Figure 1 (cartoon, rainbow, N blue to C red):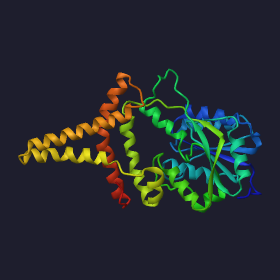
Figure 2: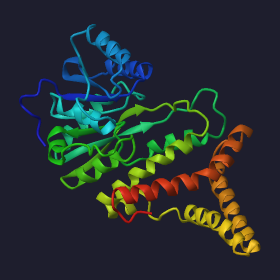
Figure 3: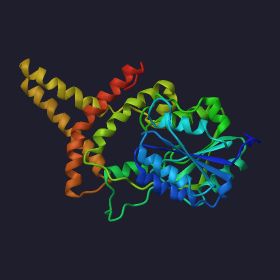
Figure 4: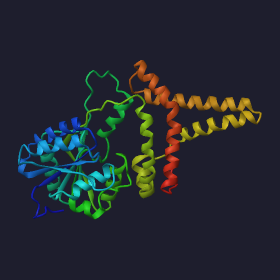
Length: 334
């Protein structure tokens, strides 16, 4: 890939946001403190929430300085992070597009390092930066389940919290698939499609920090809706999904659901002991799920109770969203 001769800046930063002005302001402050010369980059904030507080915040920052130029965007149609990112990169002026999120804090050298990596490796179509999740203030020796999940960003292969992509490559793959309506798997889908047109490398010196956001009790239950979009990723990239995302289905979830649903029928059919045995096996598997989650996470009483309660519900929610996704996207996904 080569730098476009008509680019007004070297790199365009795209930041989708959804009604989180306080987090967005923290991100903007970090972006304005970059070591890359202010004339060399622009910031495009894409307001997916169509929020007036967000618009006023961005416009107030845009009015303070000429460089870097800060632009406020709203998608004309559709919602979701994929829609927002498409709106951003298509409005970008630079040949290189840097993606991050409104809840990150880019390191001061983030843009300089990421841009330098792509310019050094001109045969790459994109480069994935490094994400670090700092420990929350007052956190114990063991993370919570939610914190552990957020830490997964540190080892992810490619995430749009920190990615540098040639605009020409985005045009070739037509950007993000806007059927991914949640912030889940849309980056994996882009990654797999970019690999079809060229190499995707690493930019380990391009660092962003991703603090753990506070969440309400039972966040893991709400997150089960994400697996609906696993089905879409599986339909589009079945081999890559099994090789890079999830090698085998969660068979224990299916067994828990099947045994629990079968128990009333077995009892009514005159096999109460068999029904009780099935429920006992299902309960043991639920405890196994809870233990897997607690093995490396906090043993604080409140957290243990949350893990036990949510582990009993997760298999049913997960199977429901998996099967619903398989039906919706017409794919043999389990």
